Amino acid sequence: MTDAALALDAFAQWYGRRAAGVWSAPGRVNLIGEHTDYNDGFVFPFGLDRRTQVALGDRDDRVIRVASAFAPEAVSLHLDELSPDAVSGWAAYPLGVVWALREFGADLSQVRGVDLHLTSDVPVGAGLSSSAALECAVALALNEHWGLGFDRPTLAKVGRLAENRVVGAPTGILDQSASLLAETDAGVFLDCRSLDAEVIPLRFAEEDLEVLVVDTHVEHAHATGGYAARRASCEQGARVLGVESLRDVHVDDLPRAAELLDDETFRRVRHVVTENQRVLDTVRTLRERGPSAIGTLLDASHVSMRDDFEISVPELDLAVETSQRHGAVGARMTGGGFGGSAIALVAKPLVPAVSEAVLTAFAERGFRAPTVFTVSPSQGARRDV
Ligand code: ADP
Ligand code: MG
Image (cartoon, rainbow, N blue to C red; front, top):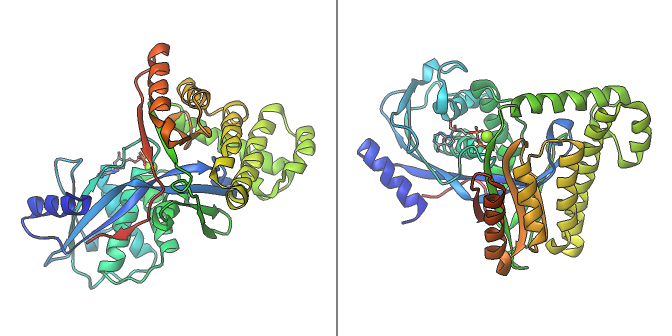
């Protein structure tokens, strides 16, 4: 059965009738461009072939009810009672989107309520943004079902607002943009200052390359504090250098920055400045030389995060180094750091050997067994049925 058929089935089982439609949106992985989003810089994610489906059916009243295969109970909220504090827990994501649509000007005073049911094969909490997949699937579904007329960049902002205000997670626009704008075998090159997005062909399939994800299952308690500290260092660096954000610092400015900043702040700044340049170089290299030539940029990105930004952990370093040693084109940790996943760009015939080597290396070091799987760059949010 297809995922859409499963979603229809699950809806019918839960609500006892057929859904009016199924929409889905992918999780994402960031190919390169880490901790650059909040510095007004560049990111380059792609959509995964792992998606969250939302099946939707009308109701006769003005209640929104949402159920998920992940949760034992459905959660209901009346459309006249939308507020950022109305719900907590997992239901804050879908119901937060409804509130955020209204904040962006949707007139919901006349719409009928809906029943929603969520299914997903995006791993939760692995840094692959199951949260954005959920938000974007729900946002697109309601936008189309209620005829609200928002474009995709606006729906991305709706998802971000839901996550920031209702869930309370201070995230940027990267995840939702990737989930909504992604295309098959392509990446989304996003300028986080102008929010201009360009879809860039990756040609992984053409060159027989696969992306291996190593989910380390490491989740550090200081991830939130570490994230806040990195943001503060970046703001401090920009202030001392007299720029609005680190986006305005070029690689050629780094020698001067080294004179003005303390060692730690300088290294934080150097990561962001060189990472922005690596995103630009990756896009240019893809166009001029193809995907097999971007490996050194991925490798350099990891070194920069490990040594300058100091957000890697031994498990991520081991996943990256083992992949590289066994023939990966390039490898790096991805996401915010302090745990989560690493990615490796690998020639298809080498995928089994690299996966095996990573599992063995983790066992030898006494680390918890990671989950290793391949992903391919896939289409963004869409209506399935
Ligand atoms: P990530 O986005 O990296 O997977 P987050 O912590 O940002 O991790 O988001 C995960 C949370 O999103 C889950 O704990 C849950 O509350 C919610 N969520 C994600 N997918 C689903 C789903 N299919 N059904 C219900 N809740 C979900
Ligand atoms: Mg998330």
